[in-house]
Length: 153
Image (cartoon, rainbow, N blue to C red; front, side, top):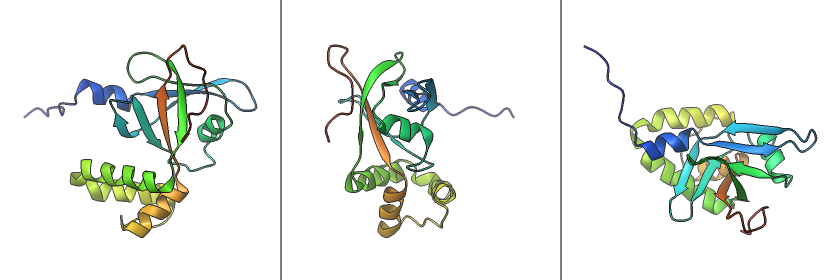
């Protein structure tokens, strides 16, 4: 019997392939990074991602250095604003992520433990510690008539 591929909605396929474009803080070179979206707000057009390698990931450091950022959410690259989520909001985003992926929760938690470097059990204490260690950044395509840069919040 032939294996069938799961039916993935086109919008979800685009989100998983959404690259983030940023400029190197020292080199000035343009970099493209594919990031997994932990939450997508269709109304605001805002995609929230987890920095799996923490605050020291090059893409995080480049983005937070204030250089130009572009996102591609399936409609081509667009200048973007970004904001670093506060711990409380990040824990809520992760709770929603766990609800959406509850069928594969053991795998998700094992993966989080790998990135964190400690056993992640999903408890409120562990989620808060994770949110402190792995920042979440929300990206929102900008209206080209507005100035670019970090959004307030």
